[in-house]
Length: 176
Image 1: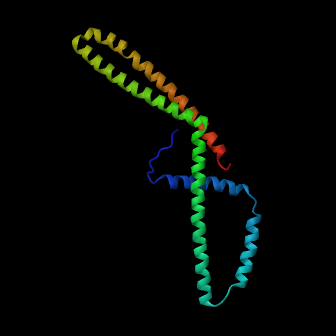
Image 2: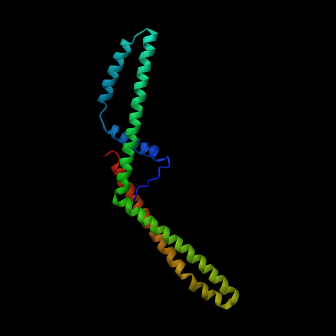
Image 3: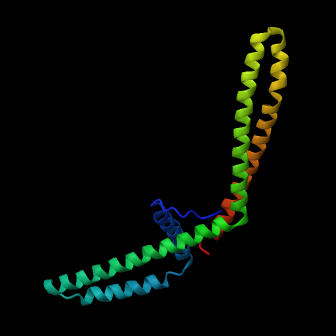
């Protein structure tokens, strides 16, 4: 699927969300030993906290600034991860097959609508001209839409299966 060159302002938050999910899966898989080490450091820092307000304010301001910078960097990393994951999912065969199948199904649905509309017009015209031939004409004119509707339903079922496969493939990619 071709990437669009138009940025509608929703890509970055979307990619950040996908990247956040990917990152969360990765973090869940990791050990908690790092967290325990940080807890020990935090307890030591609390014990060593300075009691003078001015120094405490300056230290807090520096810490907040560093955290803000770290959060910005993390957000950008999540955007990059999300973008990469979305591109991988878009490139996989099952996603491309699903897109093609959905387009085909949509086209069949439009054809069915057109054929049904034309059949109704033709049937109405025939009914006005002769009441005894209306039934035969209606049966004759409705064969194509019925056949098209059946093909559309079959295409929709295939698309649904393709979507399920693409979703499963995409789910396996999360956290890679």
